Length: 299
Ligand code: AMP
Image (cartoon, rainbow, N blue to C red; front, side, top):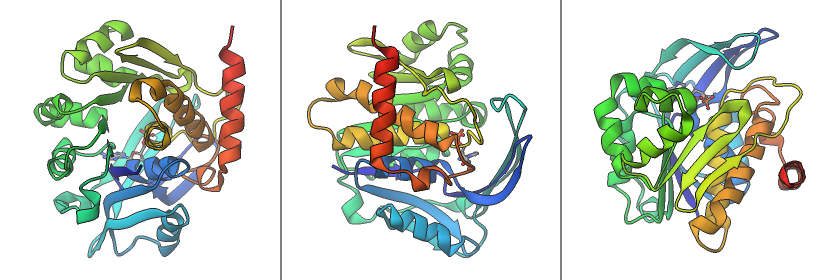
C-alpha cells in the first residue's frame, strides 16, 4: 500500500562545529518521503519555488516518489537554517523563511485522496488539517509536530490531535504540551487528547511507544559519530509509515518492527549532511542494522 506525505519541502543551511553546508535538500516531507520510499510507494504534497535545484527533483524521482502533489510556484523555496552545539543534540534555529509555503493551500490530486496511510509530517497544523479534510477514509493517520506550533498554533494542533490514530513528538514537546516531566505520565495524558498510539522520540536515546499493547522501548542504533542529525525525526516517522504500509497484518502486529526500521533509517540520516547519506542507502543495509538492533536488545 502507499503512503501520502505532506510536510515542508525545504532548502536547509546547516552549521555544525565541524562544517557548514548551505541550501541542502531538506524539509520534513523530503526526509520522511525518502525514508518511506525504501519500503512503499510514496505520494508527496509540498511546494517549492523556482529556485529549487533540478537535482533535488531528480533525487525525489530516483526514489520513485510521486510528485503529482508537488507544486513549483513563482517565489522562493522554504529556507531553514540551524546551528548545532558541540554535543550535536542542542540546535538553534537561525532562520525560517516560509517563501512559497506562506500561502500554500493544496488541492489533492484525485488519486491521492484514497491513499490508505497518511503522514502529516511537521508543518503548520492548519495545513495538516487541510490535507486530512480531503482524504477519503484513510486506514492509518499519523502526525508529527514541533515546538513552534505548540507556541503559535496550539488550538489548531489540539483539534488535529483528536483526528489522529497516532501522534509523534519529541520529549521536550511532550513536556511542553502536558506539563509533565515524566515521559510515561506525558504519554498517558496525550492519549486523553485522542490518539490510540503515542510515540515520544528521545533523540539518540530512541523512542517510546504507548498503545493498546502497552509500551515499547525502541532503541536508537548506536552511532559512534553523528555528522548532522537534521531530519532524523522525520526519517524515523517516514521509515515507520513506509514499513507499516508494506506489511501484512494489523497495525498492532507491525508497529514495533516498523519503529525499528524507522530508527535504523534515522541512524543513516545522522551519518551525512541533509539527505546525502540516506539518498545512497540500500534496503540490504537497512536490514543489516535491523538485525544488529535485534541482537543488541535480546536477553
Ligand atoms: P528534525 O531534525 O527531524 O526536527 O527536522 C528538521 C527539518 O525540519 C529540516 O529539514 C527543516 O527544513 C524542517 N523545518 C524546520 N522548521 C520548520 C517549520 N517551521 N515547519 C516545517 N518544517 C520545518
